[in-house]
Length: 413
Ligand code: C5P
Image 1: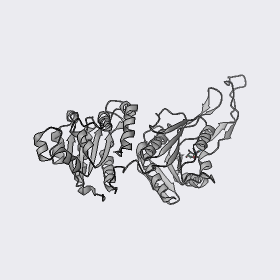
Image 2 (image 1 turned 90 degrees about the horizontal axis):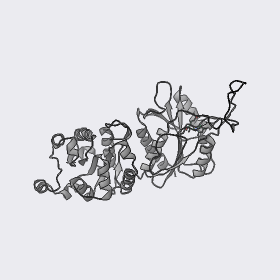
Image 3 (image 1 turned 180 degrees about the vertical axis):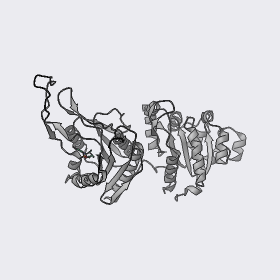
Image 4 (image 1 turned 90 degrees about the vertical axis):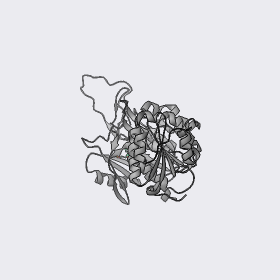
């Protein structure tokens, strides 16, 4: 198949029944603005959220929803409908619709088209965070990815139901970008996503390390693990085998990732060594620079001698150690730099000192929400120069880092 410009694309848009359906109206408008034609199919539950009239007014074509409508079938049969598009987009894809797709059900027009199509399918999931994280949904996603279905989102953030987490439908602009990417990709197969890193092993470190002082106290830091975990998730989405080595965090394990839990920097270093060889190492953990030289075996008591003095010794630099390996050095090594001032200057020095291929630098100065927040604004520093990425969610930063990693790996033998 030759690449299709969005201005000439025929998109079959299946709208599922979720509150995010209102954003699909915006998606239709954006696609039409770019010159694409949009045939809308709505599920029965989608019609509880938005009206077919709104969708047909915006798309300029009658909306289809009935598998058994004689008039609709006389105009264009459902098999033809499933084949006459260049791309099938499901937005929003609810947990129920994803489950029906995974099972290969064909119990309404939407699922019948999805089963009958010979075209690429792009899915924008949207659901409550618990439903998204449920093992059943995650199993379905893994299966659909294995079947060659591509995904955009979901994003992380506040939900209409009042909860917070991953499950928000990707923004219409991001879905349009994913549609353009899908259309631009030559090749007939459906495996246009989830393959950029297939056959690659990626090691990611994430979260803080805790350095014990005594059995109850430790030295730690404010890293939440969100960025590192999002990178692990994005790498799995791109088809990689991922080992995630994480310090103590509250964020859930990304599905499909081998997770190794550690506490201290030295445990993290040992786990990284044990996980090698790898094609790439992404060091997103906020590793403690120092540890207490002698950990007390009993809890330190408040005593007559006043406050104790802690004597610190330096921890091993895991990133520098991996970058400077003479054997088993991963082809691409990516480090992070969280700086409170002179971000570029410090990050450039770090790139050289640590010997890595890329540094993702961000500011953690007072007033920024890099630690613990869900968005991030980063600079990407390499021997080729500096790129400044606009502020975006940590999930989007992760996806871009993984896309960049795929490009870097493709350049190397
Ligand atoms: O030197 P600094 O801590 O600012 O460097 C940050 C980068 O180095 C991050 O990628 C972090 O994961 C990594 N690092 C490491 N081991 C250390 C300290 C930092 O791998 N002991």
